[in-house]
Image (cartoon, rainbow, N blue to C red; front, side, top):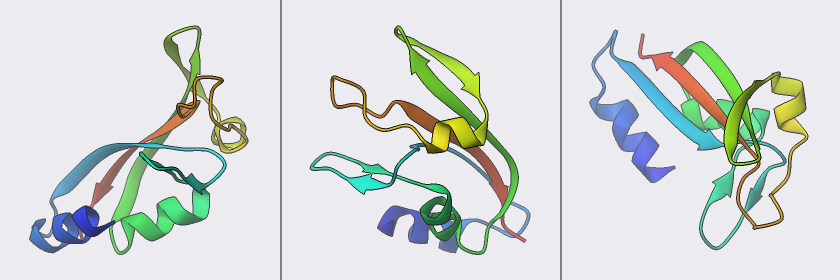
Length: 92
């Protein structure tokens, strides 16, 4: 979150951000944070999302997913995020 505050501060108006974050049932682990829809929106703050794509891990591959399906995902049996969000956003 602190890094995002810095990115939002230094990004020029019209500048674009492309980021991938763990997505699904929101939680904080010792190593990472999984964002749900609300916390992802909060993370972006004033940046305007241009595109949001979601992916699920299936047998070692990332496959496209609907937001609703990705939002229901939890951690894999190995303790890793089972879904990610890829977001393109712009600073207005």
